[in-house]
Image (cartoon, rainbow, N blue to C red):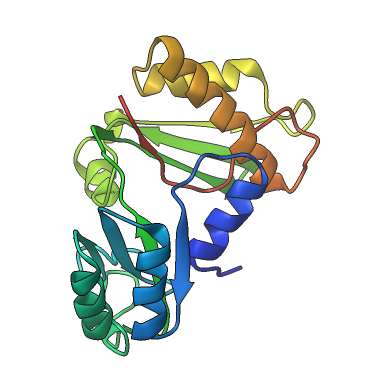
Amino acid sequence: MNIHEYQGKAVLREFGVPVSYGLPALSVEEAVAAAKKLGGPVWVVKAQIHAGGRGKAGGVKVVKSVEDVEKEAKRILGSTLVTHQTGPAGKQVNRLYIEEGSAIDKEFYLSMLVDRETSRVAFVVSTEGGMNIEEVAHDTPEKIETFSVDPATGIMPHHGRRVANALKLEGDLAKQAQEMVAQLYAAFTGNRHEPARNQSARRHQRQ
């Protein structure tokens, strides 16, 4: 199933996952209106296509004024982004996501997927987060930790602790990470009764 970032974040929000607030836009005018509604002082203008690598391709820009939101919206909307996932033909941008900016101290990588060999939900975690996870996997695979969840038990507290330990988080940050793992798992499996857990997602954790 292919969904855009703004749609995925709406799902995550339903399950209690803390995500930045944003609004979709189909036109420059809607992008400007979204920026004014969000209020700033920092916004992120994001192209919405079904492919990774948008940032490197120029499809994600951090700006500090409504005028720059308008400028970037004009530049990105209707353009074709070529990333490592689109192929040489690229994909045309027909939709934007205007998101509130965040003060990021450190970026981590956390995703979930279905392990085809075991048919279990697997976590992929790394302190080397961000846009270069493929390079990390190739050059320093030891910095990536993976584990799967037994469907018979579902998500358990030790899964959250494992993620927190892998990310070298302590104290309140570790507790936040453990709660988020539970929420993400619930979102990924579509089970609202799981005790608060995870969906394939990339998180910026503030320290």
